[in-house]
Image 1 (cartoon, rainbow, N blue to C red):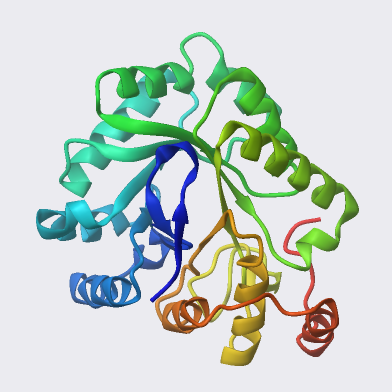
Image 2: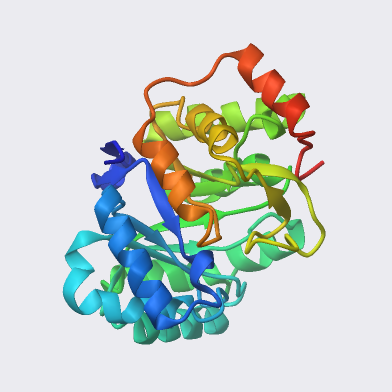
Amino acid sequence: MIAKAVSGRTGHNSSRVLFGAWALRRASQAEADRTLELLLAYGVNQIDAAPMYGGAEKRIGPWMDKHRGDFFLATKTRNRAYEGAWADLQRSLEQLRVDQVDLWQMHGLTNAVGWERAMGPGGALQALIEARDKGLVRFLGVTGHGVKAPAMHLRSLERFDFDTVLLPYNYVLMQNPQYAADFWSLAACCRERQVAVRTMKAIARWPCRGGSRTYNTYFYEPLESQPAIDKAVHWALGEPDLFVASVGDLELLPRMLDAAARFEAPPSEAEMAALVEEHEMRPVFS
């Protein structure tokens, strides 16, 4: 079983690994149902979905008839205006077959122009707050890709008291001094405010425009072997209050969950340096 920790002010005793529903974007219902059994077997109790993840929400919907209470359920919107964001939420609730989600997030909020639109009058933030006030969602968050993500998340927290943030975190990316400094500044702020820090791209190997040619991963080619995945996942789990999103590929998902279930301590700096050299790892974002 994968270890659990309290996810910030949400109070949810969450598995340290959350299921990234991008993995279901092209899946059949039968494949999705086998994935559900895998998640339950490992004790994964967080699902992170989005209406732009292909058919993922439609595949998750049937699970909720019996398993709604087993999962902290999150979804997102990429719309920056109130009307578009509100329409996204209604579609997500319908596809997920629920009356309420636990977490609604503004997705990919790292562009300055989009940020101003989302946070301003008539922006998506207005929809998030209204949805929470009406009981359609419980908590609110922001997500972001790229090297600007931690600094932009800090800016978002200055504007509004979000409950969660989601951003990239892996060994190679954290060798970028500016990214690492921004990440730890964000982490310190989140710890002070009890904001849950959710991370992604733990097993990224190198960047790949448009995504992997072999796997269902976005932005990058992943590590493949179990020993390599073990080291990358164990490193990402080394900070006890960070949560790690699972890989978006159904073939690699069991390897990542197996690695997480066996986590005891992070690998050494020398082990990670050797991993980088052996697999020619490069930052996904620069």
